[in-house]
Length: 201
Image (cartoon, rainbow, N blue to C red; front, top):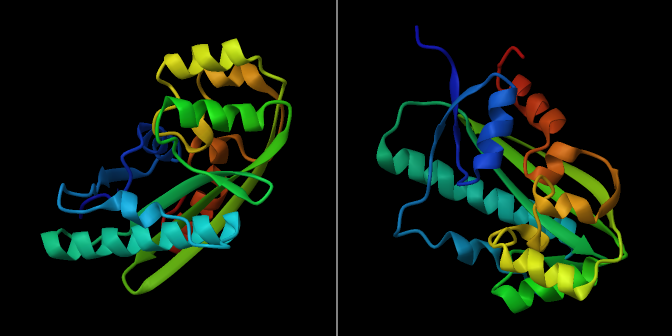
């Protein structure tokens, strides 16, 4: 009998690394060029950050499960996650360009914001989901430091235009909540979902 494993439907190497820390074997289940995954991340009018991240995660899981069936892959649970940054009710997703990244970081400077990561797992017909909410306070960051950080390329593809595990850690004054959730995969919540799917952790 082969060892149990899951499919991770995420291109994020951070999520793969965090999942590995739980001792769970995984295989990547990535979208093909024919799938427009970015379209799933559009914010709906009046949508709250919590509703947004939960909806996007559910849609990504739907797409991953359909992909799994289409490819005829061996059965195994499928795991998805999505992270967003919220400053008040403003949803800060991935920056469109350097100017957008600078705008986001200027908004976060000297303020406390929330980092919401939703995680969802489907095992057969059963689906489980969880939400991690953390609070991060940035120090006041000078424009030149923001510009230098954006020029490093690190904000590209990152919700809120920063990576807590990278150079942006220098901007942080205080964290309340899940550090791994801020990185993209909340360990506690993910472990709970895996146990529901029958994994002995």
